[in-house]
Image 1 (cartoon, helix red, strand yellow):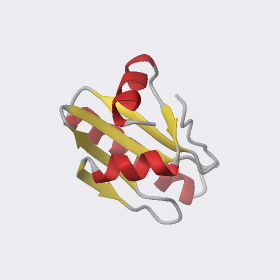
Image 2 (cartoon, rainbow, N blue to C red; image 1 turned 30 degrees about the vertical axis):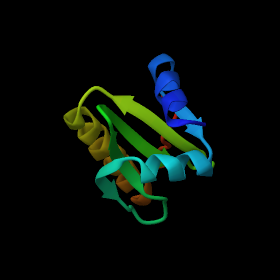
Image 3 (cartoon, rainbow, N blue to C red; image 1 turned 90 degrees about the vertical axis):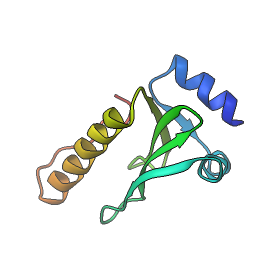
Image 4 (cartoon, one colour; image 1 turned 45 degrees about the horizontal axis):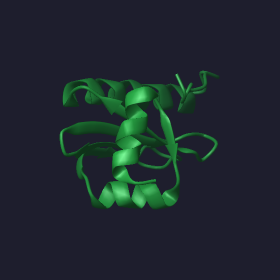
Length: 101
């Protein structure tokens, strides 16, 4: 998937699943604003490509997912919430993350 196709798709959908090749292109063409590496999962990133702020993570099914946010602050809040959820999972809360919600 080309970068402009990804951005167009993110205008219509809140979450887009991408392949490894698209992730590599995204990472090479973006600035990593923040990257976290919680134990036991793939990195979670906030990226900027042009004027777009994106959030990239990998689901528990190994799906690479990308979301678009309207601001860096909004993406950072989502990142913090995601990290908190992962921490609760490791603490044994029995909860699950809805990656598509």
